[in-house]
Length: 383
Image 1 (cartoon, rainbow, N blue to C red):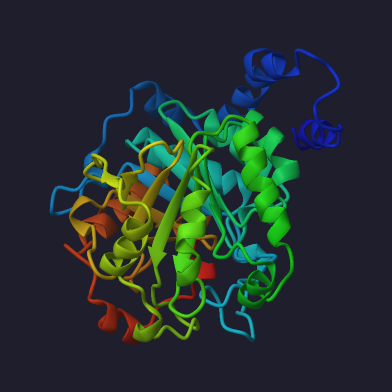
Image 2 (cartoon, rainbow, N blue to C red):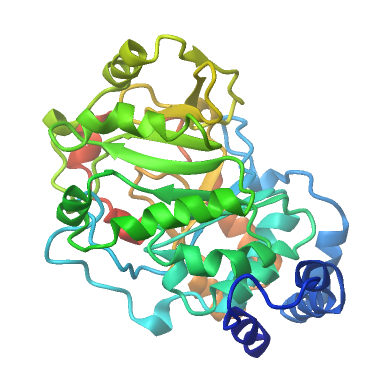
């Protein structure tokens, strides 16, 4: 399967034969991929997939929250060195043999989807640096019951990979961009490449992604003066700019003084765009969403620090090393890789997952307590 994907991805774009899109998605090649996925899972799992996609008790915590959204970190590696994500000296990477393999990702992905997960988001590190990401997307998108396959990416290599990734089943995109100024981008990420991210955003729009979500971590004294420039991106294009409160993680030198709270961000935007109006948000939504009259796109605020949304949390995280994390800000983790490699069956894995989900707290701690709590760097957790 890798040979087919790599061969296709080497073609110049647009693809040189007219009916390629229809052929790949709807004919024998897609059937081949689905068969390959089934070969990775045993008969019991296939039967689970055929039963439907109701949320099982495994995914319901002690507060009645149903977790139908799984974030899977594909790698701890990244081609940027963002200051809020990792310390200047970098981070110690997990040895490759201890990371989940393609087969293990599909096995666990199927277990979650057959238990009621409807959305999977692939994260990193930077997920596009993983060489088999196309194969992983193909196999995950073939899981019966999965409705959404999303990727969060820094956009550095996305523009050239996105046409193939879309054919592999990627339905939603979040692209991280914290500044529109190239010199500030280089300062924040410790790398060049801001123009490549812009190219990726435009490529996503051209390929029909709607909305294209742009994640912007707002930090006082760095990019808070650019917020309205980001909002201007939504004027003509179906872009959803998402302003994210600066959050504490190991090694990112979080400081309360750098935090621009939601109320202040909202005030900044409203002063220039007085027609900003609140939209109706789904109960599990992580952002507060707004529309500006006459704009094709939307504006959102992710308020994890000042107005948390724990009551509607429906997310679980599978880290690249196979650990399950039920809360972004909680230090508690449980390994699924170890029992999986020790020969655990589906029922045993479900028991481990269910126990972890049942231990999930009602809400995460306050920002100052989070800052003092040992946790992994964001690049390990999956941002």
